[in-house]
Image (tube, rainbow, N blue to C red; front, top):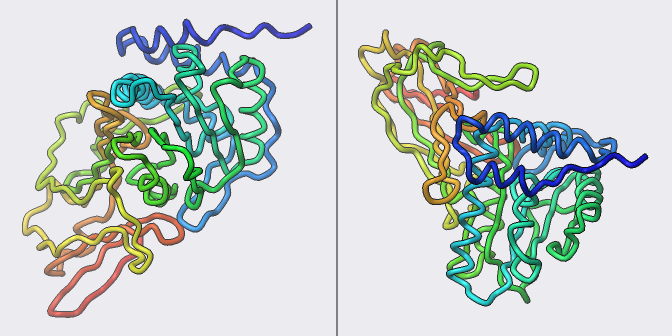
Length: 345
């Protein structure tokens, strides 16, 4: 007997229209919806790329349970599509979803809110079993008319057909503090392919640093598919000298010469840091317009401890570097009496 598939439209409608207090419930409904589909066995696991790690199919699917992230992206993308329709009237919107995973959870739930004549989506993922799974789901739901292509491809190098205007790119391939996964490299490759006025999702990833007591920092954690904030009592934690480092937007450019995506200026080591002994990286994500993820809202915006000031207490200055060469990661350089040292995290 064929297992009945729950209609995805009312689940998505509740995500779009209800209060954030219900986000956990709605995302569990969405996740349970996808469990009705047989999942192709994953023989690849994590895939090491030139500029990061592509998650296994199972881990990519589990990202959906990061409920604030999923709700924020779905709401932001829905509004972005509406705004693109105003910007490109009477045009069938070409949307590229890079790193769609086995479920394409940030776009597929929204398709039923539009007509096939309005949306022309291309789904790409480097994992073969993910593409096989999403093709099966699309076919079962009868969404083939919305999808021009579902294909195995490396988003770091993928080239959208030059004969078509690319109106929107969706790519959420990131870990906290932009480590491990290839979000930046994918953005560098795909964003320049947008047509003029096109939209990149997320619109902006803003990275800053400050001094804090990392052990007291609130952060999102997961246990048995339940997400909760640790150190909730420390939400008024002291953070000093918060300073922007860089932002990733559709204007982000590729640099094929310098392996460092970003290198900061030199900062003096603070004299008094007992209350804030750690150099921390903070990530803020603007999905689209008002739909944004703050620190500790999501696994991908959790604070990240870069280094302890106690380890460089006798140095005079430090510099922060972020590299996307091989596996994206952070590095700190310190100087003392014109002697330079490097510490790889």
